Length: 128
Image (cartoon, rainbow, N blue to C red; front, side, top):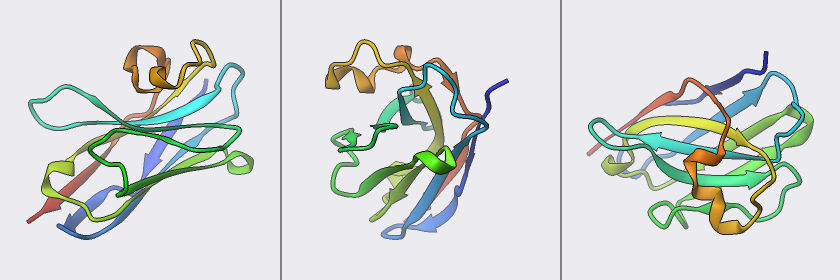
């Protein structure tokens, strides 16, 4: 059974950095892109970033653009999220997820309902 395992979460002061990793147990058929989502206490889960396995530019939520960088290592079946200039508002459980290719419009990469495999999540806490 395919598993997505996140790591790299933790506690950091505002302005600091963290790097999250998400490793897939295998490069499973039908996985075209990987995304990161986050859920803060009392809030709905929201899109953070996404990238295709073939690489190229990532897709970002406006709230993290220019601070976070998503990257992918196909050989290692791993996707990374480099988080810089962290703010207390970034505190959340971060989860990675996989989605198929279609629909392929760039605007769809933020749609949570299109992701069909999810990791358990890793906690990120940013203190002021």
